[in-house]
Amino acid sequence: MTYDPRYDPSTPSQGYQFPPAPQAPVSPMPQYGGFVPVLPPPPTSNSAVVALVVSLVGLFAGWCLLGIPNIVAVIAGHVALKETRDNRASGRGMAVAGLAIGYVSLAPAIILFFWLVLGGMASVGGVDPTPTPTR
Image (cartoon, rainbow, N blue to C red; front, side, top):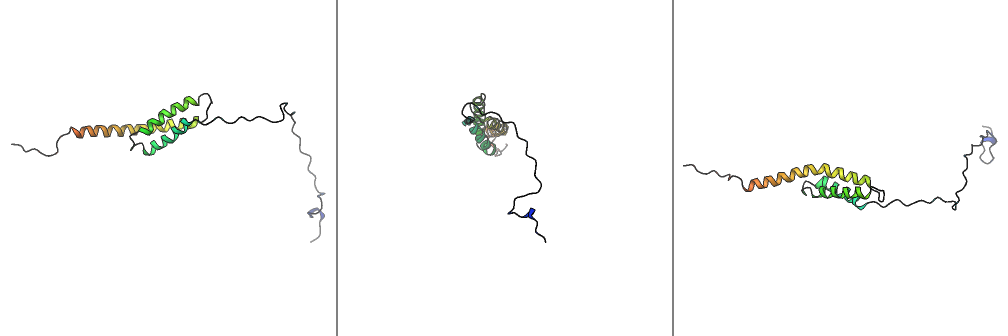
């Protein structure tokens, strides 16, 4: 193997030279001090967080809580939509998700609620299962 100075890491490269990269046009610095002010993001709506969390609780446990979390999620979702309408608060997506999950899981909870209530009312005033002797 012969020594080639082009591949010696201690010597500067004398091989192919790349052309200089084109320079992007430089805009002048802003006149207000050289920095760009960054506004903080708006705070997240607490109602949107409540709507999403309670709707998930209602989705998984709403049938045993008789739909109460679903109703709370729908109410909190509508409040959150009102808060996030003019971008004073963020979290509109959470509010919409809470509303959607709340409404979808509210239907089976309502059906179960009326099934239990009507079943309970029917059993209270129902027919006695013991046969009566006939004469």
